[in-house]
Image (cartoon, rainbow, N blue to C red; front, side, top):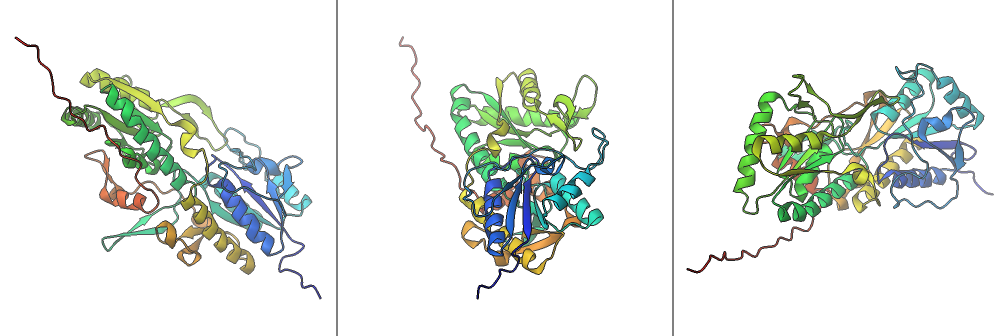
Length: 411
């Protein structure tokens, strides 16, 4: 006699919200496969919370092949917020609840950052839906309560799927930029995504960035003067006379015209979570370097490059072990939780036993800790080098080492 699987006849829905990462499809694939083993019918909810509004936008993933190496999300994404906001004061949670009932979705897995999982948490607390959160962000600013041990010292850190792949991309991008900076004896100011946290900006140090500016440390009038002096010293002390400076898009910069330390925004538009469209800080920094130091400075915006491309090996395995913890939560019907990594480990050491869970009510932002960054030197610490070293290999550091003898006119 055929025995029914544990949750046969039940349906699990998966959605992805917010900015995409290279690890989203890997997360969907891993969760889908484990839910299928338990007997769930697995639905994909398209375009995040938007797929549960109106008539709904749902696809059936059950028994379907799914490419978890391909970056981004095949379920698509949006920054839709079902709860009322300043931009959209209409409460649409009744539409979400209606569609969960119409499509007979028994359990919901929300893959996202603080915004997407924050909405899931509210629905869990207010409406009692069975929900499991899954972390996702290239900014790495979700508080996962992960521990990082270095030289017998234990520090709290954060590690989220999507960040390792993005960090590798930024390190490689920075490394490639060195040749053009060196060819023209320039300062290259590299703008990197990071609204509130400098985790991703810090990965540029693996590619050769000398200085980094981050959202956690405001560039006041006084700090700018110190920064320009350090730029001059580093540039002229470099035999090749070039520098790469990485700056997070959310870095607050002192505006000489109005006397305020503020964000640089590409537009005044806000999304449904109230976020500005940032962009342009690299141009402001480069312009002032030219003005204050006389050194040629140019800009390069990494834009969406960081979150694009295939999922890396570290992220793929990371998604798998967190999904093993999702499997555990599903079996025990323990909802309102999110799986997290307990300790930062190297690729070969990522296993399910090194995972735990946190209550979704504890999900919050986690800016870069002060022990990872030196405010005085505008540089990341050795502790951050060690943190990155668990998931990144240094890019190719080939250098043109010939030192040609100078020729003087013959008398």
